[in-house]
Length: 211
Image 1 (cartoon, helix red, strand yellow):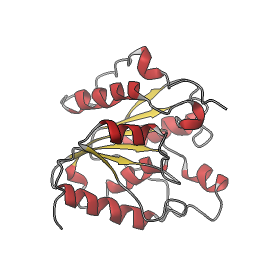
Image 2 (cartoon, helix red, strand yellow):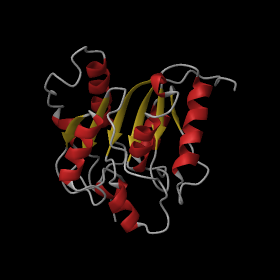
Image 3 (cartoon, one colour):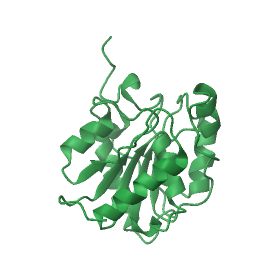
């Protein structure tokens, strides 16, 4: 499969229904020429295998090691990718507002077909960013998931699902988390040294969404 013409170092993984144009993931893709959104053929009725195959094809096309920036169900895709033959090509993953699969399936019955909740330790460095009142992920489940994945964890308070509805449109402050992941990933003591507290700006969204 041919490589992409433009060098890519970051792949962006949206969740259920994709990320609309005002979502921070789309802003990040536009702001950074070396990033690319992994587009799925079916955003509304996700099949784990289909999404995984698509991500594998894009990783092959890129032709170099990459960072992952995932949201919601995209975080579970990144976690499932740990079982892929191409997992060694992932430099690290920023996992924002991962969803609990059981909760998500209850909220969207007969739509999400994503297998079991991934629970194995990830073979690449990862940073989970979550909130205390995410309707898709109870906070204790968030902590359990981060531990199972071997991920660093930052909760940013009451931030909902860290999406447009909870005030996270152009979330440029979130770049602090990606920088933190990159710094941590280059440290031989990743996962053993306490995580530094990110800047106050990174803990905030872009403000309330106008009605």
